[in-house]
Length: 246
Image (spheres, rainbow, N blue to C red):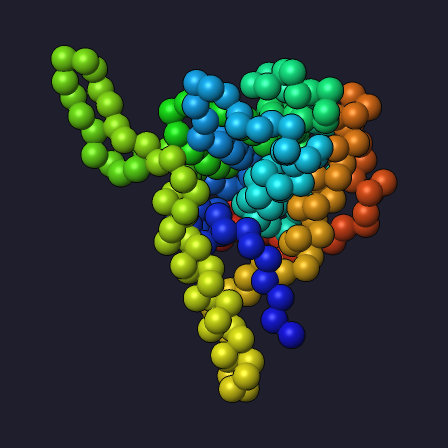
């Protein structure tokens, strides 16, 4: 049976290019990682915040950032999670369990430290970014710009931004579905699956373990050992840099 989870950032061209640079040793050994999701919003704030289930910011939004961080730090597993979260956009909904702003720090088995952040109301557009800083350099991916076109006028410098996930990740969603269909077709026809396998059960388990640890940490205000949530194993082999670069 083919299992593929919907972590679409792996299929976005800029994030995929970032991962290849990491595999090629361009940044050396990952030391600091960052991933963020800022959902597009409006001056009116969040519509119907009472309808957002508790834990959404960790279990539905930041879980994509958690997978991205795991994927950009291949061969390592998360060890410790510390989350701080609040309802800063819709404070009146906090009593119902809403958290609309969060920052999560993750410590990995290779010593790398990662930060994931999210907010539900970015007035300037839909903003998804990633960054890996390592012993040899840094790589970044993502951003809210709709294109590289930039205006320079008397009003200043400006650029159009994306407002919907289906616009920001249109090509990634398409590539994700195509990859799954190709894998199913190859299995049906007894052929070797094309390309790198998509995110599977181990990837999903590792991301979910971080999310559940973040929920507990936000509730208690304390760091949480991921081993208290689940025993994890790397989803792929450890990163081996060309020429033994550290």
